[in-house]
Length: 95
Image 1: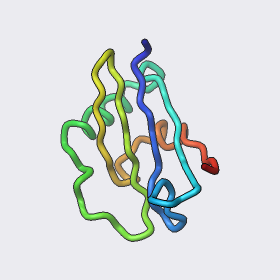
Image 2: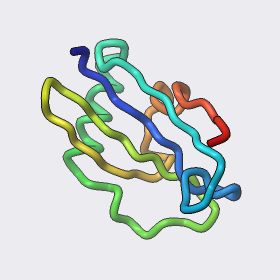
Image 3: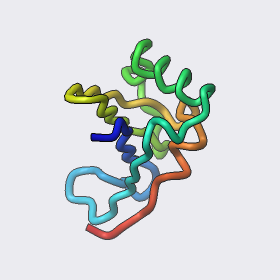
């Protein structure tokens, strides 16, 4: 099994991923494909729990699910904290 990060973009003006939403915005990237700087940034996101800050209306937040071996870790962070490589792997779809 390849170590990877599943990425979901939530919120925003259209309410991506919210209850009753027909819009989903998600992607996935292998951890080995990230630069060392991006891997360090992702490690910091999971370590510091920036996720629990007060959400900004109509702003995006990202739910990151890191799969490393059999371990799964989940966090949610504001868009400004997410490395571009993770934001760029996301695609929109109708649910």
